[in-house]
Length: 311
Image (cartoon, rainbow, N blue to C red; front, side, top):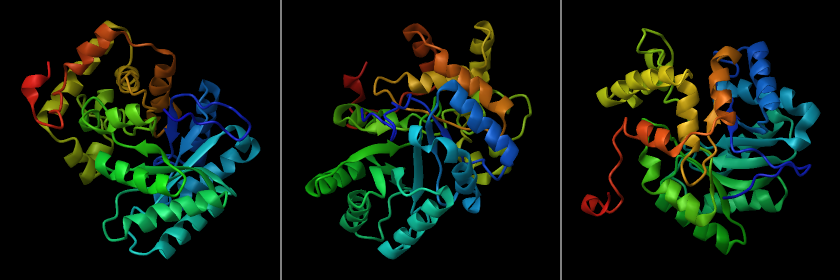
């Protein structure tokens, strides 16, 4: 696994915080409170993107990190809107750096695979920024394993490598277990996994009539709309209650416990909402409990589909 080491030599812990809610559901005061709580909990890896809240998320984060930039790992993502030319990627990255107030961004992701632009040109773009000292780690978000390894071959031909990938991963989104997480474990790539709470589904709030992304955003409602997901989400709070824990703590701890040692990206709308996820940083899940939670959801089929060979 790639170690993330800040400019002052600080080793980042194996958790991160995502700023998607900064400037949307969380105003600047609430965003600052969550940022400070993450620092107090030991989190130094912060993730954002060019498109989050029209740039406000990057602007907030840029203001927050100013006094302690050298001990932090700052990641941003560009290219989600599928630009078909490198100039657009350059423009987005320049805008992101300006919002963040950074000469160098620690981790720069291509936000998703873009089939409309030559793959070699995209990786060459990242490698060139790294060679110029404008980013330290090359990264890919929402890429399939074959796409990552193709990118890795291109990067290595240019004398560099892909260090970080960002897939979705939670108890109700386990596709990454099939190829992405084993690939990361084999190739020493860090998996900074997002949505460990399944868009809030695994907090238990929707089972009791609560509202959030799944009720407010049609995309999230579809993403987490399968019956078995909601059945698992209804069972998780029961297990958590037996352990006198919050279900979000269990969900995050489960996501972090995969053998590939992913770095779950936590997120929330408020400090109160974030705290149960932060509690997972100090909770060590037992193998028995992990197996019990894993059994709540279907294990995805192996990549070869030879299910008879897997116990």
